[in-house]
Image 1 (cartoon, rainbow, N blue to C red):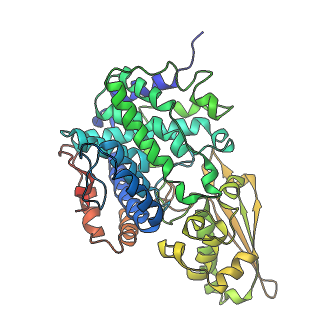
Image 2 (image 1 turned 90 degrees about the vertical axis):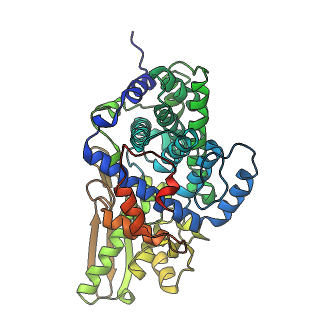
Length: 455
């Protein structure tokens, strides 16, 4: 009987991928996602300051060769530590990319690991870096999706749990390891997989630990495999393996198209600094605000708000009504929707601003109702329906099937430049210049450091 060996499928793919097999639209999307990674890093540098300082005090005190750069830091670190800190920044504002099938984030760990290791080793081209990034996205998006929704229902965070395995595959591809070397890297990473979703309920400032540990685990696992350390057999599919630990149902169909269809472009970019599960509510509120203006209605006439939302969003981001600080604000459907309806936007500034009386009133008025049909893996739907009742009996309804940033409703380079400009507030960098550099990434050019895109 043939035993399934998902890690072997991934390692054969990863070791054989070359950039000339990748369509140009996927290459262009990779450049766009690099620019978005930088935006997310600077947002995290701005928002999660207390946790950032605590982690910096720990990581910069560690000894080791100074070989890889940390954003906005003069001191360089070993690749494992540099990747760890950059991943902390990238996920600090919850403004980084993600994949709805895998239910997690990718660039924060994959790019942090690949960039740091490429700088430490030297002699790599941007083409090799792009290959490694694409391997990381394929492994994360497909492996994470294979385990969902069982993984999240058991309380695991796919960003950390699948992230370490994905980073190991990406780093092994960067170093040109054989298929067996990639396999061993993934296996070594799989036994270290970690990350719990309790950070959606409390301790939200700690959430960046999950991608940070994934990035560090990926680099360490690859170095061990490179030095000849073997990994376990069938690390993902064994009865004591990764998939058995995180889910009761494995979606093998998520491996279809591996090597011929790339999942990076189907991942989403985030226009708002909060958990992705809040985004359809934000957009419904913005549409309602516009519709109200067209007929001359004001918020003072609003009597009730009901948001019909898919249950997983309520489970993860619908428990906090009035956040106590920016960390909780990132996981509050109530607060983000009320801000958007009151102010006409939801930005980094809203995470830290005290709620106005109007926002408090809207939060108290809002009722969340679970509706399974608003999320459908087959069709790609992941939306909401917002119903508003006004004085005099007027009723308005806004439906969002998929929020902005997904492949079916994409962000453009112009959108990304606006996002980056907002995230860079307070830093001496120019968003337009960074976007131009990212758009001009040449696969044949030598890779030096991701910081070169910013300096």
